[in-house]
Length: 454
Image (cartoon, rainbow, N blue to C red; front, side, top):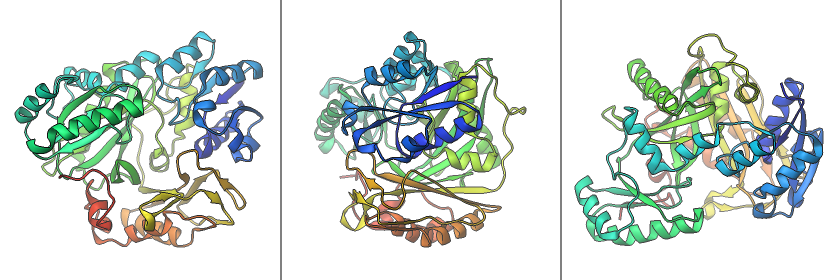
């Protein structure tokens, strides 16, 4: 096991890694920007190194400064968390060349899944169902139009790199295809530095169901069950739960087997997530694999009793997966609500500023992962996530009630948040019945919900 680990991230995930390392008796090194000097991950780590100004490009994305911080503090391993450099194959490679263990998959595995067009073909070869679409990248506009006719509308134009809904457009008919094709390429180039796109048939009103997979360096690959992430705004998840209300035991088994096949196809090591779209007829399709820990990993932790961050670190140190069975045993139901510093009444505009009051809920089946406190200043430079509320119960109905009660007793003052918006979701009949899909937010708010079918 490592003696010292550097955390190449910030916010709640950095603090989460600090806590996991403490339980493993590993000393921690926090890196921080000038804007995060008062962040809790800096306060609770054993050592802390300032790596630059507030802008992420000059701090959390500055590979040379992170490597230098690891070297001067004597860290043996680097945990990238999620976001920033977590799925950057070059960063993982540089860590290896610097004699640092990267807590995650190999650079080749990151590359294999990081390019969505390449990943799609790899999954097709492995027998994992994929959405009908183009065979790889499509550069020519006329060729793309011809392929769209063959695939059938609506067609989704997707950036091959990156994620988070950037470089993604939906064309519902031929008259709008060229405009969306050009727009998707331009946005992909601006967001990821390359304008490669591919085409997929748009699965109308699907559920978004993902499977947590884990592999070790001893050849074992398993899944730890699914999470339903269908409630999204602009392809950003708002609510996640486990297990999915939509899956029968038979469908869960089939999807789990496909997720494991996907991971085994590339010899995957570490924590990863295989994401599927599930249509109303029970057909499911691979869309991507995230080669890192997910924001929503706590719902899997709550339902399995496993600490996924500690498991990541153990696997990176060469240890086998700690649980003895082929699959983990699941208990009850868990739901995660993402609390963002955003104003739903102003189109979810970011709401940075000083938190004057912060009172988090408690009680049975209530967990809060956060890095903020009363007096904390939410900087305007990063993702707006300030907390994750995770509730659990013996049944989904109990978890929903606990979620509503916890949200209504969660007090954050000084900035606007999504707490009230999420509380209203818990009172929605479709949500309470577990009958949601990726169009839920559109029907719930009636506006500002991301890509629409023109």
